[in-house]
Length: 304
Image (cartoon, rainbow, N blue to C red; front, side, top):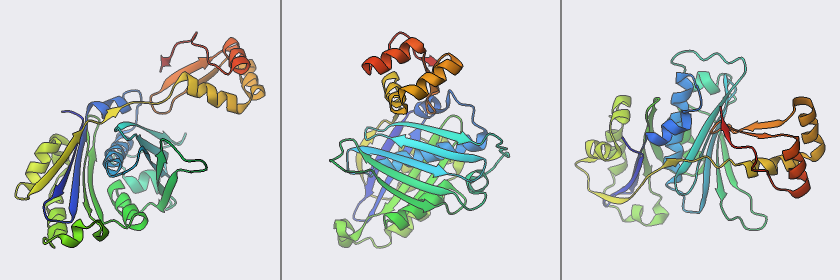
């Protein structure tokens, strides 16, 4: 299995599709975390979904998918860069009890207060430009249903998603009905394409999603359809944390607060939520940081 994303269009039909399979990238996302199986599955589905949604963005920027929960899981975050470098993390409450087989509602929407947010952040912002963010309540019993609702409400796009994940693979299929203003939909002669293609995709089982690569899934589902294939992409895991970025964060806290932590604990240690890499700043590092604005390379990266 490999990390692969395929994009395609249905010939003379107002429908586009994408299929993604994450293997090595997904295993790197979770290798330094010990998530309960239901949390791992939900985060994997979100990771596959974020990669699929990012493939539709026509701007040079990052997509961040967040679910804020009111259940035992308080936050899930997936970030996908324009070159499909991705990272993901989940935060559980201290007293979290995760029941085997728990789904979206039990994990993050136990009291109906869960929220789904998608943020689009351009890499090169204009002066005063802020990232675009859309937020909707969580609906349905799966992340696929929640995102389908988000796309209808926020983007006015009919979208269907089929997602699956375990500790080896995260996979997904996306179908989207093209808007009429794009020209393709108004010129299409295949008016039944949306119903037909979504019905075909709905025959997929979770086992088939996990066991088959993108090319095999496309052949299995749409072997009778005329497809126009786009470029294939190779998503990968990469965390953007660094000692320099953490140093800038400490500078923003202020010298007094950081030095108080050093006096109490002997050092400041910051661990990245995504890759679990820890950076340690002792009294000498902190003094140098606030004197020069530069981080010391004296203490190497460490992983927990």
